[in-house]
Length: 141
Image (cartoon, rainbow, N blue to C red; front, side, top):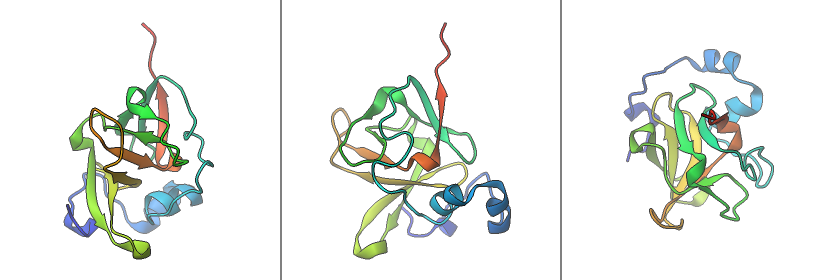
């Protein structure tokens, strides 16, 4: 686990000016400045669709709706990522707390935090900002 984004090699990189131009203000503030949306305010916290939640910045598939659950936290929560290689972590010592931040492994966008208080089978709670995600409905066959 890294303590600095500079220690992690991301395949999608841009300057802060480029990110600002590409993303809206809320998305930039959350994904690039490690912000958070107020609890119970994001469009996906109570979303029930069947599909995949991808990184809003680079489109990498991150979480499957089959692993989404109601944690009571006010943010979309998942007990696992689609693949452990899709999400990376770093130590977050902000706001007088010690937490594990989760980032998109492809572009480095801040997603939220992961906590060891989730349901089985993993026992993990990936607590994610809706503004960091884009929902892609599963295609019906």
